[in-house]
Image 1 (spheres, helix red, strand yellow):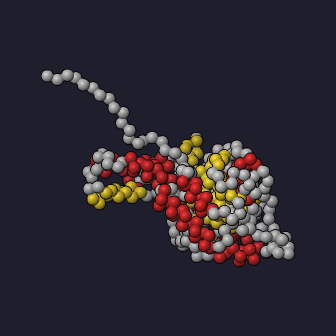
Image 2 (cartoon, rainbow, N blue to C red):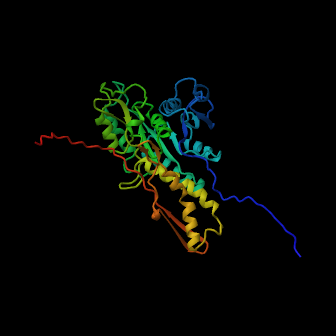
Image 3 (cartoon, one colour):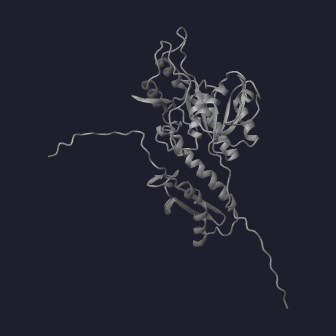
Length: 370
């Protein structure tokens, strides 16, 4: 004979929320307070207390970050002194489980070797910590001193060797022409009113709020010709529109190779977001026998592993207006699963961005038809 038995368990399928890495930033630069210490910051932080009670390079970028971001910007900062080992400070942050989307270094690079070293550090962090981080570096601005300074052309020539021939798909270099555009564009990348798929070039995000307009040693103002020349060299900088008020930004140019997929920061950001979320889902599927080499097992794997793509593709409708998601809706062939052995599964995902114009050509003609 038998007696009835009932046992109820709670299954944990790993379908819950994960922490959002996107829009979090780690700033590193010169300050006077909390030296060599990782401090948490947001839009409400008192930078006079946390960073410096006087002007400092790091405080300048942080103030621009908040002005050009919004009330929800958040991240960390490490104040340092001149000559401190920035690579060691990055390692310290990683060891303290600081996991930002972007690292911003306000100390200007001085040579190509610096840029290449920062790229190598991002690759090392990816390999060691599985953290997909992009780094924004400062380059020197134009010295306006009439006796010892530079013209805009001389400044262009002086900084060109910093990135000439460099391949660094996780690195962008921003000349400090105004002095605080590094923090300003970071704030723009962190705004909640736009998605991570939006370019900082987007004019509807609004004009940048920067320090006073710069001049070179002759007193000549910064012009579109100067910024276009820098952009052609793969630097990232501001731009202007004739007879249109405001200061705007161009593309944040990642130093990817010619023809590379990740020459613009927004392309890499959406891929990184998908990769972060898929990685967590994949970890939950280790030795889950529902994911197996059968038609039903493959269908299950496609469904759960492609969920981040479906979520990122969700749009918002407001009346007749449709605000697109971060990527296009994934199609059937957006994910492929192949068992290469009984215990090894290869997954391939395709992320398709949504195109938007950076060049608009308009033709107008008279309609004199009878």
